[in-house]
Length: 248
Image (cartoon, rainbow, N blue to C red):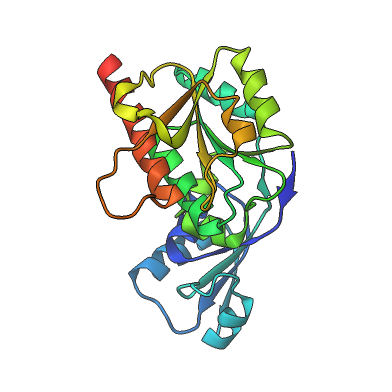
């Protein structure tokens, strides 16, 4: 497995890291701040024998990668990238059809974090990103995921198209978000599925798009022509959730 060292910042992200069983090597708290959320984090840290340092706001500001530490920064064991096999096994263990979200060159770490959060809440078994020209697992991503990164596997692959083709041989099919596609409400999105979302500017690349089985359009009636990629992912993911619930 590949890995990347990072800090975890923000109250929710740090608390979820503790609750998920992640190893926190050191916790930095704003000196003199002991409101409810900080007390909860302090209690979790004591429970896990984590080293706690009380520091001034200026020190936290210097350490922060996101600029939004909320008085809490943790140094954790590295986040690990999962494998596609891990995700398929997760689906099998849950007795569910695989549901994966593929991101084609999504470069904004806030969007990646928000998508990981959505993936977790929608019951997706993992998020797949390319090794190049895409956001990786950083402190900003961890914070934006609101702790979901501790529960939802993220795999990094060399070639999205080849990965998609390999998964097709295992019975999965793929739908990509595209304004020129059929309305998502007219598509059958049940079964083993991979959802492919494009980057913030140009959408899913033509190279990746041609490996997808269907194109799904999100109906829009406003004066602008596109949604933020994390919002679009949430809309399409929850149409899959809706169809799966109806099929039960």
